[in-house]
Image (cartoon, rainbow, N blue to C red; front, side, top):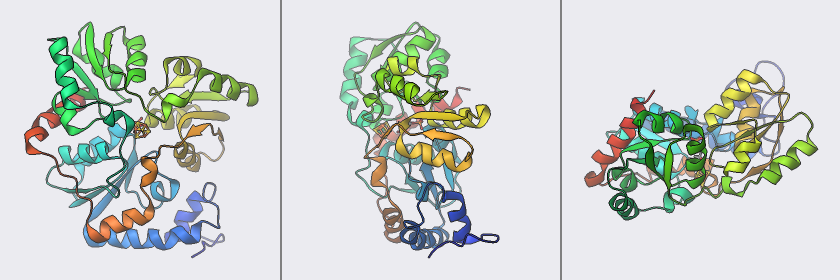
Length: 329
Ligand code: 13P
Ligand code: SF4
């Protein structure tokens, strides 16, 4: 179905009107029937779709009920009244939703949607670190399994890492598993970090040289980097923050030209809301986020798969670490 371009758009046409700058018209006929089916299935199943900012525009703008960064998705998951949550994102996000709203059925459309950070550390690794550094609090990035969270004192996201670390009021923390985020937070807070050498496979590939090239090729560009990037990339940027901070930065500052140093779909999704801003698009794809497609979301709702469950032996302790994070303002 092709969207009409004249008059007042309704239904699917209205969706296309919003995304036409980032989805070519020849792609839309493949997306429209999937979106229509998903919107119908959501009602039949009493489901809501939570989508991370790195989801593709046809998911983000076409079928998602709630969008945001990891922190926003966690907060919103807790408030969902519907019976079913479909998490259009990666596995740790679906686990977080289940931990915070355990009576809901939480579905992830592809069980293989993982994360290089979550895969880099196990619960046994955290127990070994605690044994080596007794009494030092463990701050764990949400990009981890429930088992790892259960061994932790408090979680954090890129949106609140500085505040979480400062809330502890200690000179030294164990910070797992993102070494780049740890170094960036250490520089901001002055708190000493015992670091786990994990990295995001998307953000670790950016270099300070990339930023130089962007500035050289795009005069006047504002550079905004995610704090999962290496320290020298963050230092070379004009601003660093979570994906939600990036959206807020563009909304509040309205730069003429901006480069978001992060995953590829981010610029597409933000560009829809700010058509007057020019987006320079140096980006790296997250293969895990890209496992989620409209077809898989539709299949998840048709078959009610893949349901996310958490071992009761870990869920209470993992939930506590996330709740402690949410208490930090
Ligand atoms: P935020 O959206 O919380 O900034 O996280 C980025 C990310 O890489 C999530 O996997
Ligand atoms: Fe993990 Fe990086 Fe992909 Fe986010 S972008 S899911 S941190 S690999």
